[in-house]
Length: 178
Image (cartoon, rainbow, N blue to C red; front, side):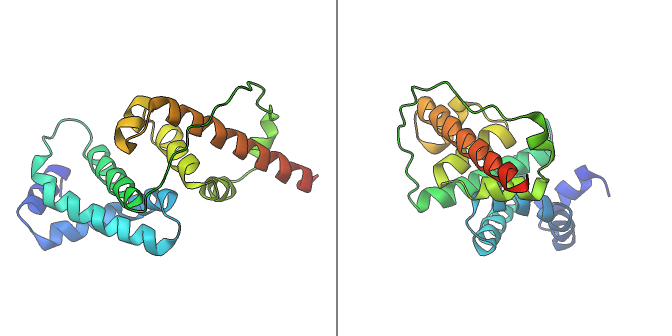
C-alpha cells in the first residue's frame, strides 16, 4: 500500500489503515515524546493524544512536503501543549560569560546515544525543551518562542545554559572514566 493510499484510508476512518500507520510510526514518535516527558507513562499519553490529533486532522494534509514531517510537527505540538498545562516556566537568564568549557572531540565520541539521551532528559524542563526543539528538531529560536509563548532571547539563553550543563556533565563523566 502506498503512502497516499494509506493516508486516504485513514481519512476515510479505515481502522486497518489507521493501525498500519500507527504501527509504522509509533516507535519513532514515542522516542520524540520521551524527550519531552518526565516518564514513559506521560510519553504514552502524549503519543496517544498525538495520534488522535493526526487522525482527526489528517484531511488537512495537502500532500505537499513530507507526511512524516507533518505528523512529527503534530506530535511535537501535542507534547508542548501537554507541558504547558503543567505550567513550565522559562526564566529569563542573563548570561554574561562567553567562556564555555571546550570539550575534546573524543568526549562526545565516547558517549553512546543512550547515555547522551539520559543526560539530555535529566536537564531541567525549560533547558530540555528548548534543547530538543532547537538542536534535535531543528526549530529556530523565533519558532520556539512562538510555540512556547516566550521571548526568542529566553530560548537562546535556555539553550546556552542547557549546553553548558551538558558539557559539565560530560566532563564529569570523562573524569570518572579516566
